[in-house]
Image (spheres, rainbow, N blue to C red):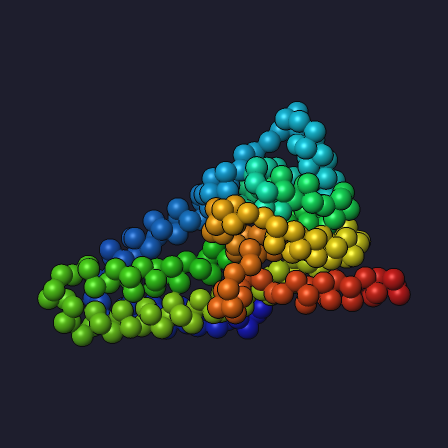
Length: 281
């Protein structure tokens, strides 16, 4: 994880150097990047919840809400975290995610499909996994890590339109666009590697919080198996949240090759190893 973040940092330094070398006035670019980062950083939680059609619930909003608040409150104390907001998304896709720029402004969201699929111990394992993401500040880390990658993608996509026909023949502009393309491709791969490492870390954190790695392992297997029975329309509606979910929605071979998550089999194997370690202590 440290090596991946170092490589991302080095890549972005080179990218900034190329832009600074070929463009004398970067004020517009810097201003745009600052606004983009501000919006992405401060509104990521609201955007994530809105995209899933999720709504924040209070304890008196029904039995499901009371049950979730009780679990989140208890596990937050065990993880030494401020209690995050609790949200529910009404979808048959069995999944969960955490969002928010900091530990104090975080939210944990579960779907109705998840609550219908898991027993109480398994549900606690999944929520503990999401709380581990909050404790590790993974949303903030991934937002910052993906920021310049997003800027590079925008330059690649719209670079030819910024300056009109004259600038399309301008060597500095062409070099900047090529550099942006290279940065986007490399950072795309590095960010997904970083995301996979952080999923392993969250699995381990969940096992430490609950003391029951087997509960999370059972939940992962159950969610993975249940995914095949979810209607395709629900899958498409939720696919944009893949990077947030505890288990990504399955895709084609290329999608799995560049997945933001490790395979369920590898995660379950590691959790079972942790279970054996705990039993021998």
